[in-house]
Amino acid sequence: MNFMDLIEKSFYSIGDVEKTTGVKPYILRYWEQEFRILRPARRTSGQRKYTKNDIQLILKIKELLYEKGFTIGGAKKYLIEEKRKRKKQSEFSFGKETESIEILSNIKKELKAISELLK
Image 1 (cartoon, rainbow, N blue to C red):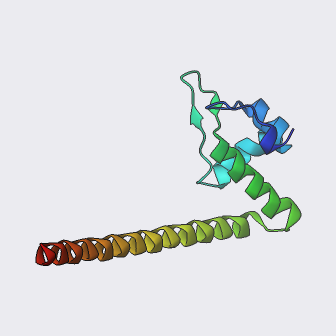
Image 2 (cartoon, rainbow, N blue to C red):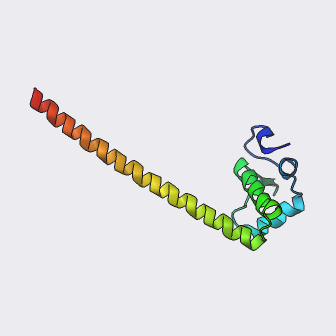
Image 3 (cartoon, rainbow, N blue to C red):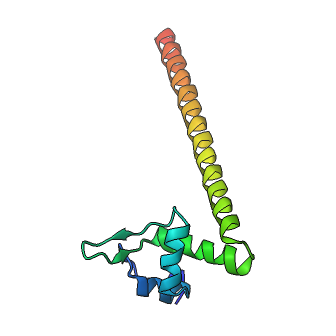
């Protein structure tokens, strides 16, 4: 089973995650201790509830450690840096959207003024 084959659910059990990612539950629990960004919610019974985002993160960690040969420390640094880059990009795009809204607002005011002159 791969990520794209997941049945659409709100939450997935640790067994579902193991089937999807191929990562054993004891390794998933260890990664939760090592990677602060991997924190699945828990049911009142204490069972872990993984989201699709958690599963994507697990697949990324698996890729970094097993395929690219990162150490756990190196993978942590990489993920933190990647998160910072995404945050900066979203701030940058938000700034561009705000700038575009201001430009459109000014154009609208100018068009209204021209319309009043033509009446």
